[in-house]
Image (cartoon, rainbow, N blue to C red):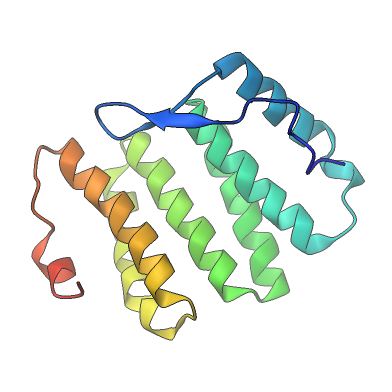
Length: 156
């Protein structure tokens, strides 16, 4: 089963720019390849969507940003078909994070702005806001700005 990646070290840490870095890059790559190799065997659509999102995250961590974008967009499409709005939101947030590291700042900011407007209508809002502001904070730190942009500071 693709969920069983416990034999691979999928752990990561953060560098000085708050970018995720694999603790063991070779092991993480093996784990991702294992997940990709087993995608076709997944029959449950929800599990398929979740695994696509996880692969997208690991690929971002590994620096394979174009592949990360592809898997996250696929996860978003699956979750839209399943009508699971919270998971669409989370994977769009992951995608915006990937856009940041691709240096597609305008695209990332457009998606962040769209997502912040939608946070009011989603359950588990505090968890999502925490995740959202963590990513926004890392973007601000990357730009050497410790201050949150004014429209977002009102939401805290």
